[in-house]
Length: 161
Image: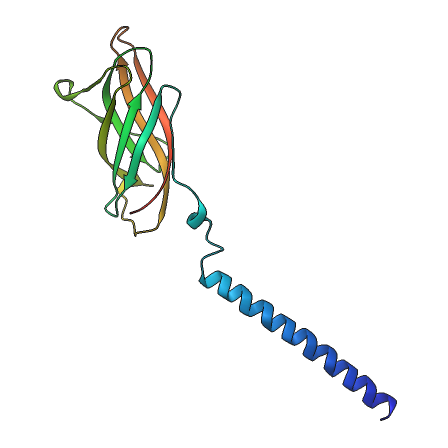
């Protein structure tokens, strides 16, 4: 075999070796993509982060945008919940509770709220199962002992069930 033939054979072996390597890498990446490994929402854990004195004992979001959250209050005074909301907007518009229906929470008690979560533009969230929803959870409350009104803002990250 002459010198030019050896170079051609060497170049062909080089291209075939790297071609097979690229093909295998492409197949592996395609399989990983199909399995959802590149979807960070699949591995993110649900969170409900509220300020000190409040915690979410349990929470879940349904496909119609309805959130159920069991709120525990551990502040140093009993509270009246006067409003609440769940939204993806940067500004939260509270849903007020009429004075006759305000929710009384003694120290260390909890209450399950059912509320609608909204997307940007105050449109009711239409979600698909497995979708990840992140937004703001807010509660208006009044301290019983002082009568001072407050707002508690929290972050919500939950997978739709």
